[in-house]
Length: 106
Image (cartoon, rainbow, N blue to C red; front, top):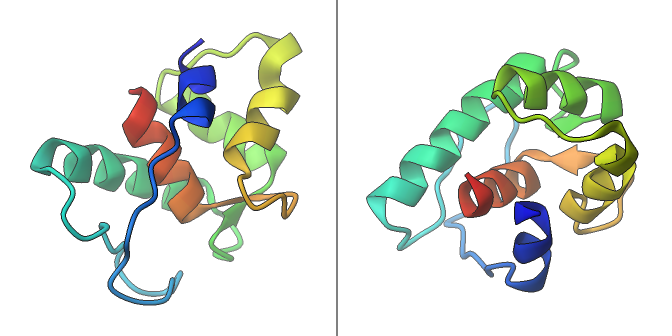
């Protein structure tokens, strides 16, 4: 149920630059330290499962990442949650999308 709250109250973050999958994850400007820690934890897991180093997770990589983080989602909700996290409707989840979702729900 936490992911529904994320969808309704999605924060708008300001980043100090463009996304670069080859650079260290850039925490948004002005976030509290606890949120920054959550985002960094999510980024580390994300990058571990981003096997092709594109900066995106496909559904299989995402499901493995969620399990690694101890997040159990009922099979019947997996597609819906994946689509909700994929805020830009690109068909895959970007690192910033994932980190923002994770930090708002866990």
